[in-house]
Length: 219
Image 1 (cartoon, rainbow, N blue to C red):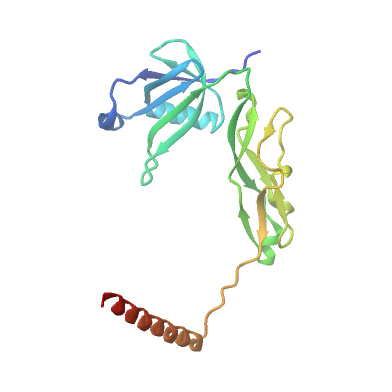
Image 2: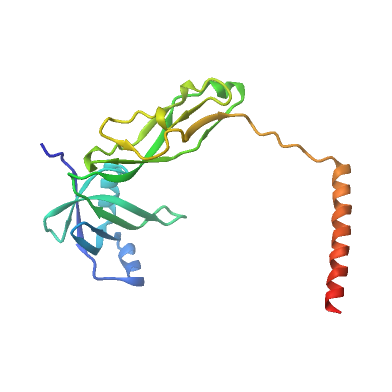
């Protein structure tokens, strides 16, 4: 039985270049779709509808996209461009997929729980925010959730091989790549006034030598 996907409507976009600013002012989002049997097609999407669908499917969910009311094609969201100050969606790229063939995708990694090592003064550092996987489009996980409650002491860590990965998914990252670690706080040593004065004296001498060298070269 085929899996049900979120539906999204789009229109073929005739407006290109700087004129797309007017579309954004009207609440529309410019985009494009490409892949497989499709050449790149410029699109116009309703901004609110796209945001609602994208929130429901997450970063890796399949969407059935219909252009100008035609037949739907399964797509993944390839890229979403945002305006940094406002987080407003500026542009969306979709890639058409074949539901019977594996694709590569980046799956977000989220942390959950509390690390006992924090009570010792450790700082929990997440080293990987997403992991590359290969799977059929409908089998791509929405995310990987990592429980950090096992980080009980300094330098305790979790690596890619510790992720809970479904059998139908192949992780393309190195199994030994670090995902998260309880790290020791860094201690910054302050320089003593005597050291500062010595350094300033040395820098002054170097500057004098450089100035003399420049004067010689000019002569």
